Length: 224
Image (tube, rainbow, N blue to C red; front, side, top):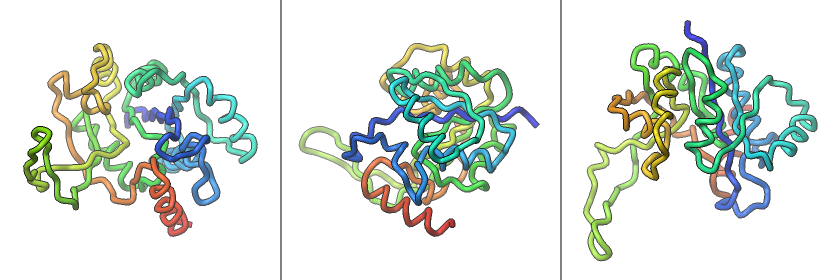
């Protein structure tokens, strides 16, 4: 089996949460969101190489949190960049070989089965992302006055972990940053590589708003 790595990107400032405390540090179910995310990957594979990407301004606080919560899962800290692209690139510099997942720090509820689907599929497909169906109707804005319906059966909502062959992702990140790079799959796709989709989970939420936090509390309570 290939060496497993995960880069957990936690550079959020909590602006949409309306909180002075960055969202990755807010407790959910009695534990900071970021600790739950790290624990998920450790429980999936306790030999996985965990790289946590944090802005310099958050690193001392994170170390204090780890001490206060007696959080002892081994991980390496990489420096956060100006954008998610640059943060991932910094984390990737600490990965040498095998398979690497890139995970949102504030997406703490992915199941072991879902994480496993992503890591297993990459052995065959090289670039894998979890997705879920859209349950809402969708419209495309054409200009300031007009819009049109989008066929939601052709739309998927993208989650993390996004998992890749390490050498492939490193090569993809040699390119210059573009505003169109919204996630790692978009960087890899720019090389002409096909992205393989696997089944995600509706409970694999990204916590970015107060409502997400309330939903997260329900999910955390149900998993205790």
